[in-house]
Length: 332
Ligand SMILES: [Zn+2]
Image (cartoon, rainbow, N blue to C red; front, side, top):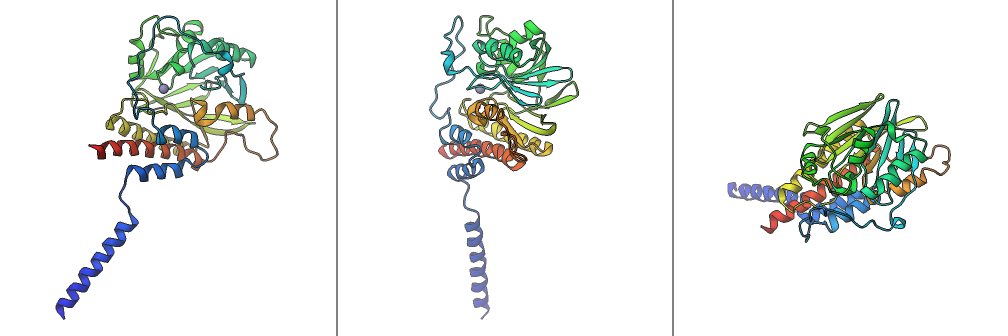
């Protein structure tokens, strides 16, 4: 009789364990990718494809150093975009492929990302003028990370207009090693952002600059306010996205942790607008043009979503990075 109770007890414990195992299937890269796909939904499908389905560094050769000397400028018809006023105080001055923005304040302009060298004059300098803004009022230039498609305009805006360049500390170190002949030239070190981040305030507008290493070691992201017909909205701007860094488990862990950090910052600030610096990730070129259309009463701005949609972006990024990290771990 005593023996029977013991057997029954063991069976009950085994059943409970089996139930637990069923409810928490083992964490695998495939399961994380499936979770990332759910997090991406329809809103972030482009980014999901780029970093979760076929990461750039899966079979990639190391990134070549930037070529010195004259370079070929792609056919203007493939990249030129007209400038657009998108919010009361935020203007799109990017190309069809890369974003650059002008945030206007009572005391001047903050430019966010600066494109390749060939696009700086037609898009940012001429674009601001066409929008009725004076490029001489540019006070700060925020560089999300030191890759040519975002930073080659920095030196010109610094030397011509005296704008202060804000960049992550590790990316300043990389930038300052470039030869003087590098495309766009080499800016002088101004504001260097460490792991603790910083705040840039101009004319009563404060941009929370958050260190989000991963895409590069010095990648920075932002949380800042914009206004839509007088109504305040909060933007979470992701400063680096693609997995084109060296394919090492530690790099994916750093990237994953930065997505968590940015998600927390976006949640804390109540961000309902998600922006990135490539138009493929946030449909910036389409949304900038949609913002020109009349809206029905109560219709949202084309960039405005809700907090859950913004948070799913960073959740997806973290899951994609963790899937890659885990796949490398299980391959060893
Ligand atoms: Zn990049």
